[in-house]
Image (cartoon, rainbow, N blue to C red):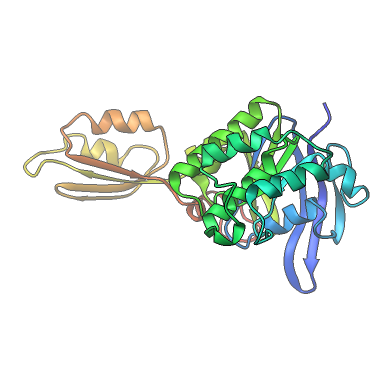
Length: 304
């Protein structure tokens, strides 16, 4: 089966400044692939180089088997693209922009634009100049996806969207997958990538350091656990928990218990539930904590 997106040691440098180095990807048709990394890691540079908005310093890439730097029109005809920064004609409405891009693509059906707009509450009939940043982002999403392209490339697509709209947008990505579309989207928010992605590429300081199943990624991470017991209660399994594999930074100041944990959640909950508890808080790790804890803090730390 032909890959939907491929990059081969894709490198982009800016003089002495870092861009991306030797980024290699192979994304399958019908796959949602999350491109994950902190701000400034090189996500946007990689996507701009992939979509021929930047010329690579070295390496190459293919979209649906076509090199966008050799045949940009043919390659990008297969793509719906939302850059992290984009501008729209201020006097135009979202609907007129949809019609314009439909004409550029040979008169594709625009009915799906209204469906997307309805789901993310995008106003297609107001001039762009009267829209907030978040509402402009919604128009960008509509323009990237209304023509149901085989490949959708989105750079930080949920920026400026409220949580309810973010959830609807992620559902739209899952629907695109059901139709066989390939989605590559970048994010620095671990939870949204975990929600929809089949695989996730981890980029740090311009280098691809791992490609992971996002659920396995979070399951390996240390979580901070805080428990409150009844004021006059007693936790009979205290010493057993302290010696439990995966427990670190154990601290007991009755009635409060706190520790870091990396292990089987079911085993932990069974042990905690052996006595009455008033409150339990399990904190998800941040992306930065996963990088430091799992991939190491150095430039070459961690496993690919």
